[in-house]
Length: 438
Image (cartoon, rainbow, N blue to C red; front, side, top):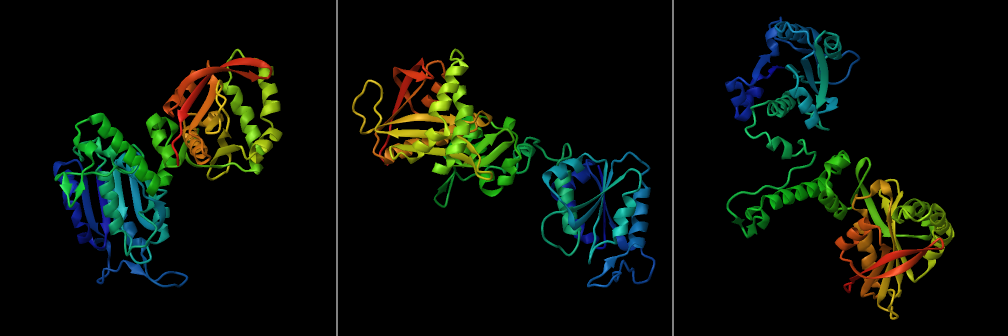
């Protein structure tokens, strides 16, 4: 790649001789030249600026000086393939991100025009945007103002150059680092000594167990990103997140929907939720039924047991505790659970310290997104707060997915029962888990 930087302070760009960028120049991976803009002035004072038309504070860099300089620099390049990008650092430009750096790393040539004072006459960018083979981009490295474009030029050159093949020794580091291909902030890193000022290195990193180390680093990256840059999480695709990722995110208050991670809250339901809960139940209950159960029986159950009137009664019954998961931004309900207090398990008469998890459903669009586990945790806590020491549930014997989920939540099969759905008897397995006192 060829990079040219035009500035009135060439010495400002001296750091480009150092570190990885300097080595890339020496090895021929990067062809970089810094030009003094004043070399193209024609008066004895080497003037590059003048007062702004329309009045106002400050000075503006002259288009004639910049035009002569850019013509000279660009004129040495006969290519007309659109591979040249003219970059103008400006607080009014597009935000420079890692994605921008990746795009620019694919260019054949970059020319950076470092403005000063109030900036470069706007006609310069307008003119070169019409030149064949040249793309003009104004970029900003942050929401603040600097005295000139040189600092931004240093940032851009280093960010782009390190992406060129051969510049960074281990290409895998470009994936794991903050804002890299993984889309997350980087995990915390450690080196010798293993203990420093009473602060030990996390034990997993010295275990020699590579899979555990990889998982630990991934978890810490997810936690950091959620805490510091939640906007980066929201850009991830569902395909980029495995089951363990979703479990970690769920513990941080997120769920994974069709569009990627979003924040959700789990809260106690209120009477005003009755309509939304009935609509959610109409979508989710059929999914838990076996294929052999007819649609008429399912519809009858939904119409009589999961209608708005039923949920209104549930939400005002002191013997029931309903929790909902809701999207934090839209408020849309995504799932719910209902605990029935003092409800003995089938075959047991004493139910004073027993509660039933009678409902646990999540919208199909967010299955596997981590919400069900959060809802079960909230239901278990509520049962314990109301004096329950055992929580049980019934799930259709043919619903192996539900059974595996409840097993991961600590439930074990303790028996069977018959459950009526729309007048049709269904075979359920009964599962139970101990509840710890709060």
